[in-house]
Image 1 (tube, rainbow over the protein chains, first blue to last red):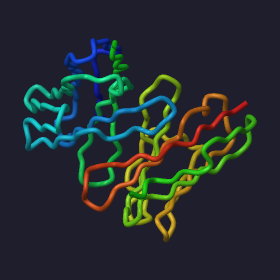
Image 2: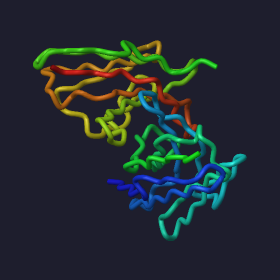
Image 3: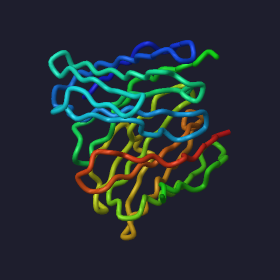
Image 4: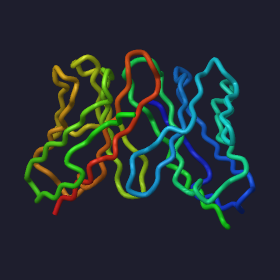
Length: 113
Length: 112
């Protein structure tokens, strides 16, 4: 089955700086890669996603890049703000059907004021 | 916009008891997923349903069963509860061939 590895487990950045979280996946059949933000005691909230036919996607301060050959994808957050502090999960699936998501272990992002 | 609804939000049970968790997907969503998240861990996929049929199966214990009803809501039934079943249980839903899964607020199950 699919295995997703995520690094780092904790990331502390100064407010206004950029944050980068990296994930790798193992199953070449995976073609859908979402990123979720989870605040304490709440459900995961989708922040951005990318399909394997696209190399990069951007939404305001958030961007995701995908390297299909290396089976590697990354989340980039620019101009970080205190409200960006949360746990971020990457995930992978074959997409389209009803396949479950395989999540990375999560990154605790801390924005220092 | 309407979101995924889960009930109850909190549940406390004793060992060896049973529990039933309910999930009401976003209107017009026909696919439902169940995930289990232990403390400090990532969500683990349990099972999914599409148009009331089981579609994909993850690490769901044999003590657990689930189904999706004609109104598309889903129930996760958990029997012979163990201490290790204490976790957050999330339901997610999506529509048809779309990729995005929308998660509910979760049910926190505590087994004493």
